[in-house]
Length: 100
Image (cartoon, rainbow, N blue to C red; front, side, top):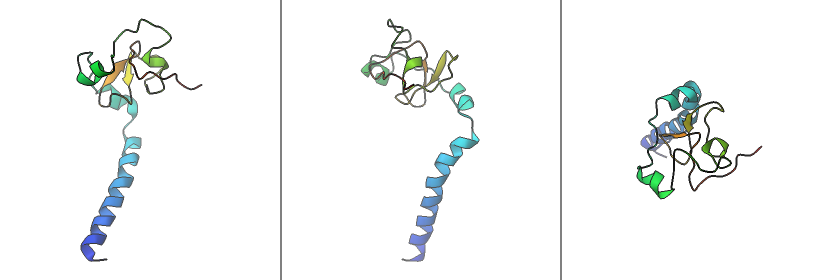
């Protein structure tokens, strides 16, 4: 293996390791607070029929497996809508009951 390939492989491995470890440095709550709120008019939200207020209290974002906001938070991050926060009282078609 030539020197350039070794250098690239080393840099790639370092990058792969740095991404997950970088998440430990910045607390998720701080990160989520900086994210914009998901709009129901967002194309991704429309495609999954997201609403800020669910008509069914048993199927709200706060009770979904994909929602990772704090229990008492009004808004929180969702795996389905990266780089946005969703309403804890909201819902979409990807709702899946939180384990536990």
